Amino acid sequence: MRATIMLEVGSDIAEKCSAAAGIPVDVKNPDGADIQIGMREFVPTPDLKLVQTVSAGVDHINFRNFPDRVVFCSNAGAFSDSVAQHAFALILSSTNRICRFSSEIRSGTYRKDLVHTLYGETLGILGYGGIGQSCARIARSLGMKVLAYTRSRKNDGFVDRYADSPEDIMSDSSVVIIALPLTSATRNFVDRRLLKKFHGSIIVNVARADIVAREDMLEFLRENPGMLFLSDVWWNEPDIELPLPENSVVTPHVAGISQESMSTALMRACGNVRKYLDGKPEHVVNIKEYL
Image 1 (cartoon, rainbow, N blue to C red):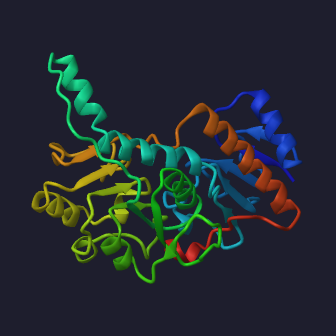
Image 2 (image 1 turned 180 degrees about the vertical axis):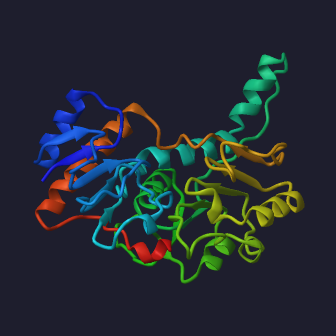
């Protein structure tokens, strides 16, 4: 068995990947390779048996290009902590008016104003995978109550209550974090009907833009100027249509990007290759959810 990394990495990284996977690993040499490890670029070669993504999401892969024999494994959970940190960076910079205060002081205005504490507030999490769990841990450390909606309920001690429906999340939470994977079932999941249930102050999206129905959200923001939409993703990125709503804050899909997280994610992906070889792969993708 041989694996290849479909990324531009040095020989030292390839050696570390080989040690983690337990088989020879080379760089960008898919011909004859049984396993491909990468982010976006994969080739449906005759020998291919496993595609192991370094990314947590797999919605960018065109599964129809590959024969049924190919197993796909995601790297779910690899970027959870960094993405959760980014979610709360967005939340806290808004509740504590960090950007506004800094801008005013730089322009010569020294003016105090009330900030908002999250203590005692309820965080609703749509999707309780790795990112949702990391968000819950941070929320509890800030004294927040945690409400989660998920298909698989975990008794991890961080969720105060599991919601029976996404409507419950929206109606019972002051802050909502969207942490769902993008599948055929979750595309446009947060739509006009669901947004009308929301009576809180902040919605955060650190998942995928298309989980939220674009026109429904833009209309909701126009009609509710006191509500904030904080997002690390946006529709049609990087060609984002301007102007952005005044009550939105957008970052350029950077929540999972750091030198530390990328290195850890690659080693984790290679570790799952070893688990595949041992007959116990994790995060096997249900391709039907993406067709």
